[in-house]
Amino acid sequence: MSENQAAQGHEEAPTRLELEQGDIYSKYLLYSKSEILFVLRAVLQKGSMITVYFDRGQSFLLTSLIDIDTERGALIFDLGSDNEMNDRALKADRLLFTTSLDKVKIQFSLKRLDQAQHGGRPAFRGAFPDTVLRLQRREYYRLSTPIATPVRCRFNLKRPDGAVVATDVPLLDISGGGVGLMVDPDCKDDFQIDTVFTDCRIDLPEEGLLVCTMIVRNAFDVTTKSGNRHLRVGCEYQDLPGTRLTMIQRYITRVERERKARMSGMS
Image 1 (cartoon, rainbow, N blue to C red):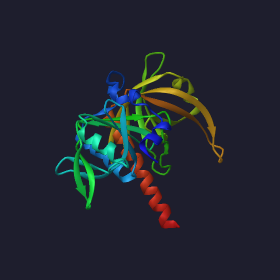
Image 2 (image 1 turned 180 degrees about the vertical axis):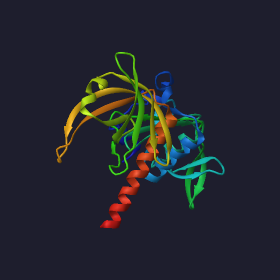
Image 3 (image 1 turned 45 degrees about the vertical axis):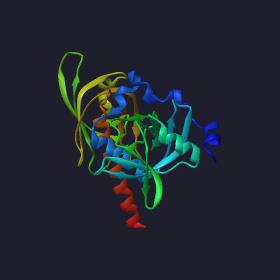
Image 4 (image 1 turned 135 degrees about the vertical axis):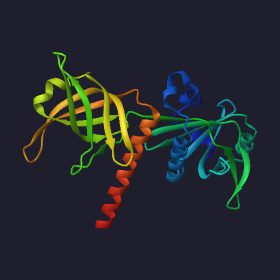
């Protein structure tokens, strides 16, 4: 399929790229080199297809990231299937890259691409981007936390009489958008919809302490097969910085990888 044919079914027009709307999506920009490298390595590992827009969005080609040269601070990309588009990309003074990684939109821009060789084949080479936009969509992957060694969340409850009660509850699950808490049903009045909890502290094993503000979005009673009852409280993060989102994603990725390894060993 040519780039022109692919364009007819492409899901996003160049004028709608979130990277170009910094006033709206600036909080999703990553500036830390280590965070950017983490994201790009994930794109490389997944072999994600990348769309590159140039000529002010009037032209594009499809490529993939095939190598990261950390010593030279360079990215190596496959050539597109259209030689004319490849030549035009080499002459472009700004290029926008967009791809998707586990339902997360990834975008960055480069000032230019150069011709290079990789594994005896022609390729594109570009400098390491200064920023990367990582836009988490609404459909977050939700990881059930370990039952035997639960991850716990600590925060303070403010009662109507002004009393402050230190609270420590286990997590049922965690995602890039929020957490599910397991709460005593008798505490239902403390977890009304839209209640805000500040300075919440969640110890993520091997990652560190996640400090965040959360707001209650839903709460409902759950009865387990053994007859035990609890209140499941769904909370959403508020204004979570990109560095803390990266911490959560690293934790989720590692736990899933360990689970799959254990399952493979049992088969």
